[in-house]
Length: 414
Image (cartoon, rainbow, N blue to C red; front, side):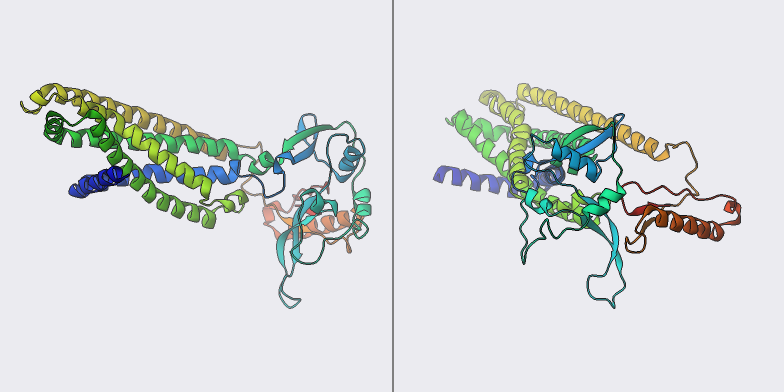
């Protein structure tokens, strides 16, 4: 243990002797490890971290399909599924929309907030316990009759089972995996850069290594010394990278788009720290193995003759290899980035088959107490459409906004 401590101190002294080299190496490693760690933090929050429910791996979402497309389910579909169920422990229905609510008191102007409509069994299925009081019981829920009136009986529907973890990640999975691959390429480029720097630095230490070999130093001891130096640089770069990753994750949480709520859970936990430690050690092996191997195969007698032509020649060949690998990885990264950017631009410019530059979409919540049935909702939509038509530009006076009929939400899309 004392030997390892001495060699670690010697490694730190070697780094302090070359501040410019140390700053360049640690900065390069910090950027590569920091980007990889931050991206892994995103992947951990979106794809890997279990949902905060007991036995969350057993939770699935049941969807209805019609002609291969998702079409529900409606509460009555869930009722039929529950009646024919012989596999699941429990089936519950839920719905969600935005509703005008006032959290503080009646004097405060109501705001639209996302709310959920759930039965009493919802909390039991997810094993959710209230901090205070109790949840409502089956006898206290009074929304079943509304569902019965709102939803007609469906026929000819298929069933799709989707793990709840996968359902929560949505369409982010391929994007996150693609970005993770991109930052791994950046880390490999950083390791190749550091390996080239180490090769040049070890070239200046050829005579030192030759002297130590000539006076009887075992190659195992030299290998251990170089390994500790490389590991020290890797861990220091990883520590700085973790700080950068923490900053990046905090920025993601603060400025993430509201349509991607999954990103609000991005943070640095023990799994992310373990990943950062692992890639720090792996990076030290990647950038340090070949330079150390070249340095230890030095001929003591030739090292004092014009720097050892054979060793210098080997370093030049290895340096060219590192430069070629950097260029290849950079080209792969640029090509992948270009293809991704091109795909995003195509999706953005994709025409849906009609003009969208003059269209608006609004969400309206209609209280069931005032609009208790489809007829009253239809009357409101007719009047609302007429008012909107009169208030828009004269060029649109002859047009009538399309009103999507009520299907499954108390939203009305106009």
